[in-house]
Length: 397
Image (tube, rainbow, N blue to C red; front, side, top):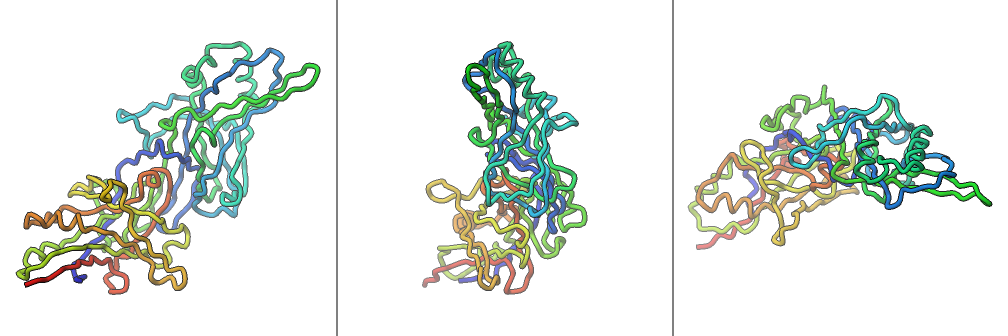
């Protein structure tokens, strides 16, 4: 086993991250000591249920928005957090690639149609219901009674009620994650009929399409190691970022791996066979006290332009996650281990190693576009912390 080949880490930011169809809404803002201020606004549309007819004698009671926590949260959830509900003023229009991105945005009203302030406990309770404007509910009932064109189909309803934006209060100190599926995200219209007895009735307006449900992520990295990240082509070497490299989902920050001295393998005069190659990376000490370490991270092949060329996968085509070893007792030997055998051998098979070819560390797609999970890699040169490439050979005569 040889582990003397250098591994260089750098940090870059992907220009745009698709956040639609992530099955997650992120709402709020918080300040991370490594990544700065992060703010997320969730957008979505609701449609009609199968039957929307109602009787003239129906009486409006209330209308609410239902949300279900997905277990993700970032920042301080001990303080009260405000979630404001806004009505969109313009249509949600997909890009040419049928996606919406962390930079996408659509205009919404200045006055919220609903608001709630809670001390969230996303790990202790699942459901959150926000009361919306009576005026909105009465408007819905009037359309339903009149059997108007606006409530004749989901498409026409969305032309009339273009969607919802969920944003945070000024004093918020956390970002909360909610499920973005039709069984968990919906409006409920409560009514009753007065006859011989009072009969209560409800109508559900479910999430319309996951393709138009997305998160707008805004960041302010001033005063952090990564404040100079500008474009995807401009990576920052770890020597300029405090001997650290960074990864943050949602905002598009990723870590690049390069192996500048690996071409020396081609100079070996001894007959040998490389049968295994692995990379060992450690998180920077105490960097995961605010946000826990992700269990799964993945690798992509990249080029000199820092494009995500292709994911490194297992033999059956599924994502090849790093092996994660967590030292919960002494907090000293936590690390990720990647199998990069195929990548290294493929780069050496033609007796030439392209130094522009590297690897990018990121999160699985669903987490990368639907969370704010993050981590900080240790890039110091000290033998205890440095990133390591281990090459296993069989030497023979």
